Each structure stands twice: as C-alpha cells, then as structure tokens.
Length: 171
Image (cartoon, rainbow, N blue to C red; front, side):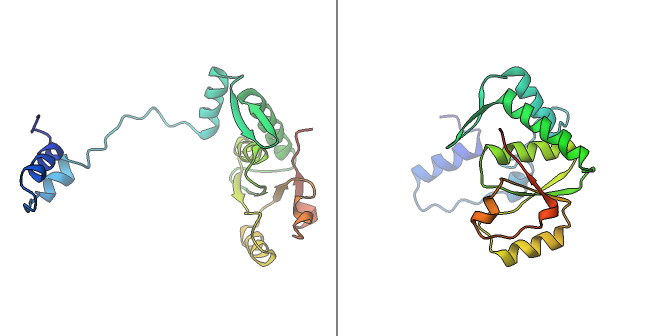
C-alpha cells in the first residue's frame, strides 16, 4: 500500500490500531493537504456564451424535457433570443430586474436565458407564495416586468400588476 498520501496513512493506521488517537498538523493540512483545490479554469465566459457554445456543438440534442414536451438546444436558443429581442424593445436595460412568475419548466428556462441575453437580471418568484409575500417582493424589487404564462396567476387567485405582465408562450 502506498503510504505517502496522508489520507491513506490515516486509513492504514485506523485499520491497524483501532482507537489510536491520531494528531494531524492542521497547518500542513490547510496549506498543502486536503485543501489543495487549485484548478485552471478557462477564461471567464457568461452563461449566455457557454450556452451558445453548447448550441453550436449539439444543436439537435435535447436541452429541456418536461411533462408538456421537449426543446432542443437550437429551439431553446431561438426562443430565448426572440424573448430577449422583445424585452429589449420593451426597454429592459442592463441589470434591470425582470420578475419570473413561472413553474419550473421549459418556459422558465426560456425566460431566464432570454432575460440574461437582453442584459437584464432575473428575479424568480415562487408560484406557491401567498399574495402578501408576492406583493412585498414586487414592491421591494421594483421589477420593470413580470414574465408569466397566460392565466397561470389567475388560476391561483394571485393578483399581479397588469401593466407589467408579459406572457410567454411557444405557440
């Protein structure tokens, strides 16, 4: 057995002498041992850029699958780009919050990517929140728009400010 690795040494000692108290040089462990997490990362890319790379390499692969259907990377990218252009025409600016009132689905993925591509910042709003909590979040966030599915909020008896609503749909 190779005993140059501190983890192997500890495991070996624990097997050979149960109950043996083992003292570890904490400074060594912190500096050279188990905290050795150095990793060379590629130059920083945004989520949008990484996604575009994936679309280029596997456009027809399934990116999202939910109970209602599936989307390829190409289809997801196309829908997100369309939403991004629409959000820009509505005046969404860099880092401006856009609320997302959607269940976890392909629509949410389209919304999040579209908002990022438009330069905005997304604020997910849990569809299970009570009205009072939703009102507080919307007031505090000052979001310009709320993305949702048509009738999703009315089915849950949730009132959202109508002048800010933007409906997302694949049809």
